[in-house]
Structures are given as structure tokens and as C-alpha cells.
Amino acid sequence: EWGTFAMKYYFADTLKVSPARAAALRGFVILPWQIKALYGMMQDMIPIMGWHRTPYILIAGVVGMLSWGALFLVPMTPIAAVF
Image (cartoon, rainbow, N blue to C red):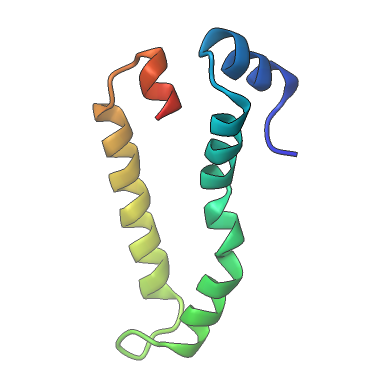
């Protein structure tokens, strides 16, 4: 199960997130874990410049850094935590 009791309480009582919205958010958050097998097969079958794993690791690192940078730009409000 995704999340702890405290997280569920925070979403329901503090942020006033509906159960449907919380379920959609959980589904969005675990999406990378759901496509992990496809990503692994893709990097084994489609080499980039002759390399199988190294370019994909570098691409994932850059995407991760950009994602953290984008999170830095989101304002810290309860509404921003829901969307």
C-alpha cells in the first residue's frame, strides 16, 4: 500500500483531498514503478551509439535533476501539493 497513516490523514484532513483525487495521485506517483519493466527491456534492445545502459542512466539522471529543479519552482501552498 502506498503511503502511511499519517500521509493519508494529512491528505484527507489538512489538504482536504477527496478519496478519488488521492487515488489518482497515488496512481500517478507509482507510474514509474509500473513502467520499469518496459524501460528495462527497451534499454536492452535499443542501444544508443552502441551502449546499452550508460546513456539511459545518464538520461534518467538528467531528467531527475530537471524534475527536482521544476519542484523547486512550485510554490509551497497546500493547493500546490494536491496538483
